[in-house]
Image 1 (tube, rainbow, N blue to C red):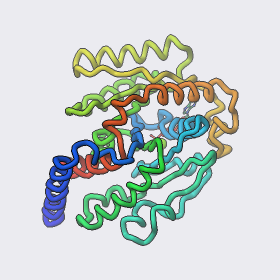
Image 2 (image 1 turned 60 degrees about the vertical axis):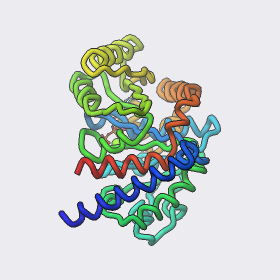
Image 3 (image 1 turned 90 degrees about the horizontal axis):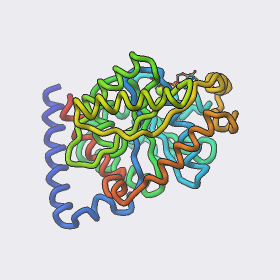
Length: 306
Ligand SMILES: Nc1ncnc2c1ncn2[C@@H]1O[C@H](COP(=O)(O)OP(=O)(O)OP(=O)(O)O)[C@@H](O)[C@H]1O
Ligand SMILES: [Mg+2]
């Protein structure tokens, strides 16, 4: 275990050095080179608040707007994107790391052209890779970054080091909560763990399962006020989605609600949110986005936390 940690530290240091040299040489151009994918981590404090359903339907809505979207199912505990979509990916990122499969072979094709990558236990093994393997994986993923506008990462719930690394590495976070007090306090606990470093990290809040507009606004304001007062962090209001039994029905059908009930309020709500996300894309976001940058940050952050 110690040996492994030592080896990893060496790899990270080497990568860091390499990165410094590269970024000195080519400044930010190197970080963004054709890699404009917006990497968005979707997370929550409490489990079962609707992250996976939201991620899939958001992906579909973005795709309908003409964007190329890839979902990374990063729930290391029990991945469920595939169940909701009714797709069973044969391989995971782990197969790419072991060079048993190419990235293309691991990507499952979903409806509306969305692509799905199952992290499987592969993400946990990221830190045990040799420098050569990390570089190999990066060049694999770089091609993905060039072919994707949005990478949506659906994490497991709660505060563990893999979730925190996804949060730290992504430049955009969507924190999902429901109006239940336990869900709100757990969302706040996640916020307490978000480190706003020198990057312009954007933290957006989605209030899911509201009964009416006022409830959505009230919950956001509560969270934002506490966050501003005690954490010095201002949150962005992404919006809210109604509590709708069609969500559960579509899960049973294994057909996302945007496809099975396209005219429902909850589908319209997700479409509004997708347009908002697209319209809010600014030069600033692109400067800090990019898959390549994300992976570097993820590996460093994951390493720090183990
Ligand atoms: N807007 C909604 N209206 C009604 N029910 C909803 C809504 N969103 C989610 N649900 C219900 O909550 C259940 C859990 O949703 P989902 O699996 O997306 O949550 P999750 O946050 O990904 O859970 P986990 O933390 O276990 O990964 C769904 O099966 C569905 O029945
Ligand atoms: Mg889930």
